[in-house]
Image (tube, rainbow, N blue to C red; front, side, top):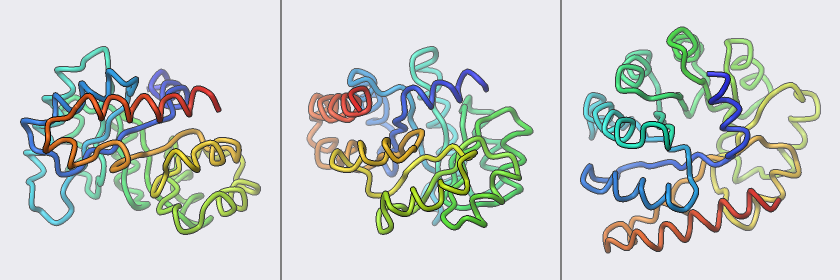
Length: 216
């Protein structure tokens, strides 16, 4: 787990994959890996349109295929059951949109890296007290870099990830303000490119974002 925490701090980009058909998962993940992405989050379906078991099976598929190359985790994790399914499927980290102490504690109990979502200082510190390894500052896009700076000043012990509206135009500013990394979804995982089978274009997008991180 300590090694994965270091890897997240070094790589800085976790790509969020939501609503992608099973047959496109390996080609998509391969395209991102070829572009330098080493961390991928596959989200659970909060509205139940895809069963938790099906999502866990997709996590298992990617975890097995990319073993030793790319670390796979779960996103939109809202329940302890989803944490357990992720662990059994070979997932390495748990990301949530909210701060729920039972999910955080189950994540740590099972030896996974915990990245719950929080926004206010009280939520952030509550998640940290519960054992979170990183805090996913979410949704950050409407508040921006100035908000990150404001909360980081008194909470300098927290490792923050910026998620929501992160793109090539604001990544450097967030890094300078002290984030440890990012969750990036549709700016890399473009559904129109996937539907056309243009995975080379996704590789190029991934390269662009990785380059920003490496050169900032």
